[in-house]
Image 1 (cartoon, rainbow, N blue to C red):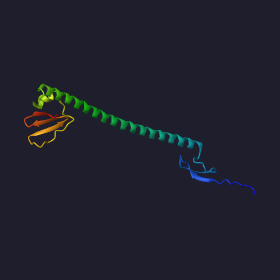
Image 2: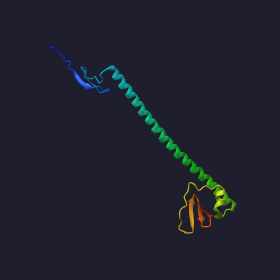
Image 3: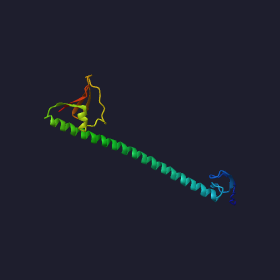
Image 4: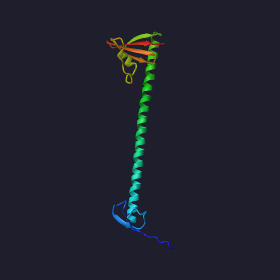
Length: 150
C-alpha cells in the first residue's frame, strides 16, 4: 500500500487585502509576500500604538496622583503654618485659653482658611472651625474667638 498525499487546493481570504486566493498549504494566510509584509508591518504599528496609549494612560494616572499628592502636601503646609500662627497668638495672650481677634487681623497674620470649611455650630450666633486642639468661632461682627483645648 502506498502513501499518497493529495494536495488539495484551499481557498481562503488574504488577511491583508481580503482577496480570495487558492493555496495548497493550509497554513497560508496571505495571497502574496507583499501582503504578508504589509499585514505584519500594520500589526506592528498597531501594537506600538496600543503600547503608546497604555504609556500615556499610565503617565496620566501618575500625573493625577502627583497632583493629588501636591494638593495634600499644600494642605499640610497650610495646616502647619496655621498651627504656628495659633501657637504664637496664644503665646502673646500669655497662655490664656480663649482670645478674641478681628477676622482681618487674623488673616493679616497669615492664617489661611482656604483648605477649611466653617461649619455651623450649635450656637446660632457664630460659625466655628475645629482645628487641631483649637476651636475658632467667627462672630457676626467679624471677630474670631479662639479657644484652646488642652
